[in-house]
Amino acid sequence: MKKKILTIMLAACMVTALTACGSSKDEGQSQDTTEVSGNGIISTKDYNTDDYVKLGDYEGITVNTDVYTYTDADVDAQFDKEINYYVEYMDAYDYTATDKQTVETGDTVNIDYTGTKDGVAFDGGTAQGAHLKIGSGKFIDGFEDGLIGHAVGETVNLDLTFPENYSNADLAGAAVVFEVKINSIDEGKMPEVNDALIASLNLGYDTVDAYRQNVEDYLKNACDEKNSDAKKSAVWDAVYATCEVSDAPQELVDDIKTRIAANAQSYADYYNVDLATFITNYMGLTEEEYEKQTAESAAESAKEKLAIAAIAKKAGISLSDEDIKAAAEAEYSDYGYDSADALLSAIGQGAYYDYVLSDRVNEYLIDQVTIVENDPISITETDSATADTAEEDVEEELQEEETVSGEDAALTDTTETDIEAETEE
Image (cartoon, rainbow, N blue to C red; front, side, top):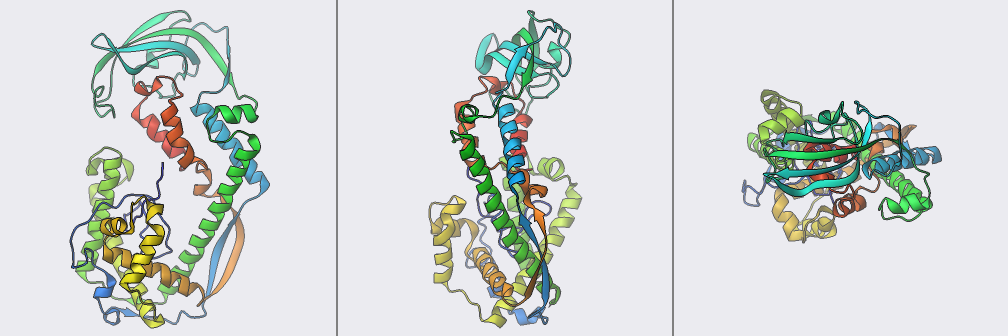
């Protein structure tokens, strides 16, 4: 599933705007096409930056930047982590039945089950020989606890209710019955990692060497991207610190706040919750904290936009309509749009202008300062290191194959979210 969708907006505690500090192509979806000015979105080109910005003497300053790298040991460790993740996700352990007869928390049970609603079996509610670790929280409330204390060979009827906010509308809030037969209490072991296992996991690779190369390629690309972002961020922070910027025009600040609100709403829609719930449960903020941080972030972002525009003016960096169109033509497909016009329509001409301008200014500034590299940092020690290297290729295939054999309708919604989050930690 492609996730490279352009985010111009700045959202407090959630994403980084593409207005400064580099030009990372962040995740998220821009859905705000509110008409704010003649070109759709207010831009810094609508203002005389001399009225707001006093540039400092940034040329020739020394900037320290982090450098990220990886070793063969890092590749091996990342490879092992991913294979362990997929073996667990695909339930590809080598199982052996134990002599244990009574189910307890922590046991892995082999079960057959059928779920019915109003006496009729529902899609995805039936499986044979499924493995479930009791206490994992993988199934809806009451399923796992309902098996504790029961014996191997026993059939248990569980009267349960799906959550009101369950993603399947036909089952949301529904009372159901699961008839569960406990076949055995099993012990699972990690299988031998060989070509046969790699092929069986449906990762798009048939050999250990091929998948390991995929991991190495990912780490290399991750280093390249992180090094580029780190350099741009360090340079911008140092240069911006030399500038004096007065409060930005309120209409520019308000426009950014509108973009933040649209971005937050798009995330809430993605998780199928209202905005208040998203702010509280996903961002970990009260609504008052969210409003305060949004206002502060919008004000600072507006000031940085003006500083970038002032530097561009001093450096003679200008962008014509043709430059903007050419930039959109070069990258619209990277962000999931069908055409450059579609990208510009969704993002807004003004916002996209500021995005491209910030990118050009960042490239220019790198040549105006002296860069000193810090001691190398292992890419696997950063938050991005645990990302799933095969996410885009694998997620859709795993979902399409439904290799967990009918477990989907008994899974909690949070399980599916956790699976995705596991690939992005």
